[in-house]
Amino acid sequence: MKKLLTLLIAWFALVGVCQAQNGPFVVGYCDGRVVTVGTADFYSKEKKIWVSGAVFIPAGQAKTLAGNRIEKIRAGLASKSNVDSLRVWIRTSLDGEDLVADTITKATTPALDKGWNEFTLDTPYEIPEDTEGFYMGYSFYQRSTTMALSIVMNPQPNGLFVQYGNGEWTDRSDRGVLCIEADVYGDNLPQHDLALQGVRASKYLSLKSGEIDVTATVRNMALATISGYKAVCQFEGYDEPVVVDINKPIAYNEIQQVNFVVKPEMITTVPDEAVNMTVTLQDLAEGQDINMDNNSAQTSFLVIDNVFVRNVLVEEFTTEQCPNCPRVAGWLHEAMDKPEFGDVILWEHHSGYYYDSFTTDFDKTYEWFYNDGGGTYAPALMMDRYPLLANTPVDLPGSLAQLEGMIRDRQAEPAFVTIDIKAGYLDNGQLKVIVTGERAQTTFTTLPPRITVSLVEDNITTTSQAGATGAFTHHNVGRAVNAVWGEEIVWNGNNYRYECTFDVNDAWVKDNLGIIAFVSEYDSSNPVACGVANTNLLRADRFGDISEGVTGDVTGDGQVDIADVNGIIDMMLGKAESMNIADVTGDGQVDIADVNAIIDMMLGKH
Image (cartoon, rainbow, N blue to C red):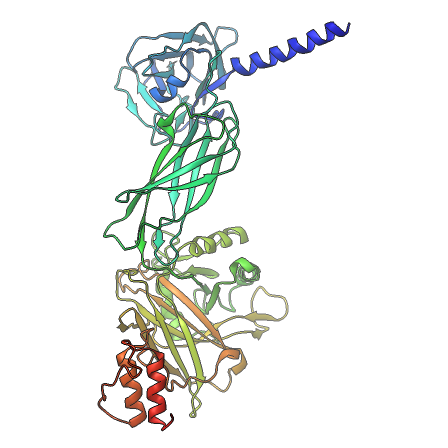
């Protein structure tokens, strides 16, 4: 009895091994999906014709299946209306002879079905060792108009070829893939075959950070689970690749989005054009990849000297006449309370749906952004003034989730300019604002960039808001602006400095005031060409001393140089012309030690 039990266990183990080796291994591009709703893009109005669709299995993949056989084919129909028969086939060319074929009609058992129709081939297709690839397709006879081609709208190369009647075959793989797949059986089924179905990288490589974020779409095309592999990144124009180890298991037929960081240290200068990067998957932990034809994909990126953190400017159109505004304002502040949206800066415009006591002239002017034949509405939002729709940056999110998605889209965009704000009260009661910053050494706008500065008041409580129960609070309401469309920035190299002053109304609560500043484009003829490059906010609790006394960087260009030294001397002596003294310490360069030495000399210190 014990011996019999041992034999049975061994037999079951052997059966299990045979099943694993024999398949089935599924071939096709639709991933088991079948679409049962036809599309008007894929049908013919002709009656009594054959309509055909096919996919191509290229040589690289076909050779991994050589020595095995296709026994079953599943063909998907989006409709069986007006379809009399369905025929599956395998060919070496689209117009070639059928190597194998089978047919189902309305009268057969089983009959035609909407969705999957499975064929067990009387004579399996033996895949030859010298295969150069094969076409797998189906044809149906339509007695009248029907939309029966079943197509998944997930474009892939070789995924869709279509023919109507005796017409020419057309490659429609840019639109989707045909719902057809085959089961392959045999003793030599592929075990190790990774495919790189696509790759994308960050738009920019900043020389300062030296890193690129890469997302690869990886699929395991063979039976064995792969526990790890290498991603080899080759940069066009540079000899040395960058190799990244990926230790993320992927099972048979699984598709993964794999994220990793690449550091191409060999790229040290900004080239004139985008850099092409080819990513290749290789060195599988479990063994040799039997099909390297599907292991590579290409993307590109621009190289710049630096990028900066982006703050997102959200401009809210709202009025106290607007009964739906509290709902969207609630979403906005619920989002802004989350740490991931701590970089969002809100600016309220009281316009779009009538006006109220908070409406300013510039609020009314900004209704130009709607660009909707004069039609405006509230609530509405702009995100960095970038186009959310075809002809306007203004839109209304339908949910909190959609709103957060809109913000994330802007957060993902790098910034190429910084904005630092200082503000303080002058003796005459005016609020003086100084904005400084730098730009990356790249063209980040097509039009001359402008600086817009607005004085805002936060936490304004009102009981007049339509659609609200009880008190309602407005946030960062625009009170004044330096110029409706900003003023053109004057650059000192890659740095800028801008200042303006605001009169402060006694009715405004000083502790609730703030300054919003942003850099943007402006095209008076195009509301979708006024994007915001970056923004910042300074609240009243950070207002303070704005004196710009003797400092190392007098010229504000971000470095200590001879111009700074001479500027300090001029200030100390009250001179109109410089003494042209520079390297006091005699170390061959102008640095902070020279600045301090000159100050000491001017003050009579030793």
